[in-house]
Length: 267
Length: 319
Image (cartoon, rainbow over all chains, first blue to last red; front, side, top):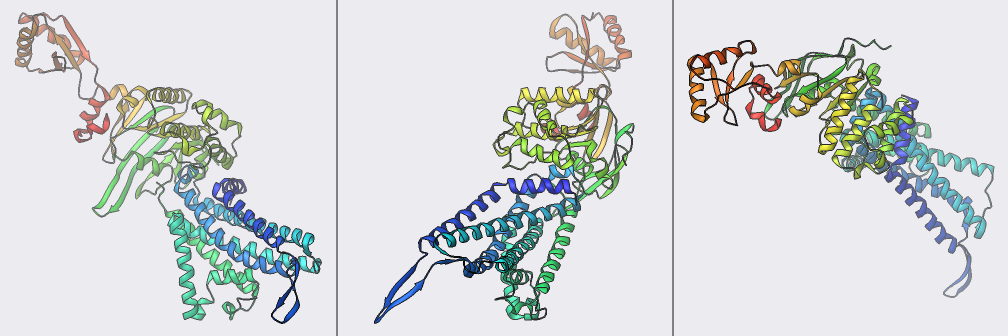
């Protein structure tokens, strides 16, 4: 892999309108959600039938809610980046790849560099969105909520949550990239990826041993921190196990995608 | 570890590329041998489907040949293509760039991928006459502008060997003339320019040497002026006395074993070697016809092509 080529691929990735528009949309969406939550952030006293004076604390409380936000948004982001990754490879391979190969004909080098660039790019997108969500929640909690419990330990834990989500996005992006490299069309890549998800869910429920080795289950369980998705890892039981399964899948699909790209005739 | 420039910029031996299709095996390139000397403009001429683009794709590693060998600037490709790629610029068929990026950004990314200075991007955009539209998105470019950007990408590297596949595609008449001058200038500067085209006039006006490819094989290679002599020389003969005298003179020449025909202007045209042209006047004079014009006919490359390949079915594509 060439560092110079990696820089170029990252520039290419972040210069794409699909990436910029998607990122801005997600940031705007997070802003809208937080503004709504900010408006609803208050303590209310309600009555329910004969019972009066029930206190409902609906204040923003980042220490309580942000962990769930990271997990929920993080898993959603693995799907978003899968789409972005597939669309990148399809746009790239469908247009300028022949010209690029006249400048760097070593295809394995090109393929691995692009995979790393897409993984880094998608990881950055995930990081930006989650940090933005955190900043908005902190701001809202500071202005009209509570920040009790936000301390060093909390920051370390949330940094771990965000780190896992970022890593999960990178792994999912690499897998989607490999599928895109084979299918060469965004729709086909996304269709294949989601078809694979559905098929793996079926396998997971029907043949549980195989299901435990599903890449998507592994990545989601890793992002989730094994809080709600422990069943996928009966055999491994650990975050490290989930990470290993995810990385093994990334390695497998990268080799398959790269070999496919190496043999492909460019037209 | 780069080899010195060889006397041959390109050497191809027994290049074969077969495709499998529903109709069976298609021999796109069928044992093609070619030597392109270093320096000057070399034309790679053939009808559409003759195997030109497939050959070029094999040279730049876009496809793997079924068999055969290719040397580019003295190095085996595709095995050592990575070592020689900075000295080779190629425009293969339609130029392909990222549609959402501007022309300048597309070139800047390519330049950065090999560490070429950013200033070179502006220079090549000026050379191809695209500086004014460089900051517009590629998707808004006309076919001719896309072609210019493709040529600009080739020039980015200051390559020793330029491979241009149909560079005049999509260009307007003024653009074709500019491209022709650019190709000639690059050849004159000591670069090797390998131009494929199905446009005989372009090859004739631009190239020093030409290789004619037909059905995946090289059928003739040589200097353009040598190829124009293929099939022998011809002379137009005019005698005074109108159509009747002309027909009588043609009869005299035919009687003495010459091959005589009429051209589009109604003049008698005789197939004869230059060394024997004077015999025409002698035979006609002996029969009382005094020639007032004996003019050598300049054969067009199209005629030479047809004489060499005998492929009249491709004539329409050659115009």
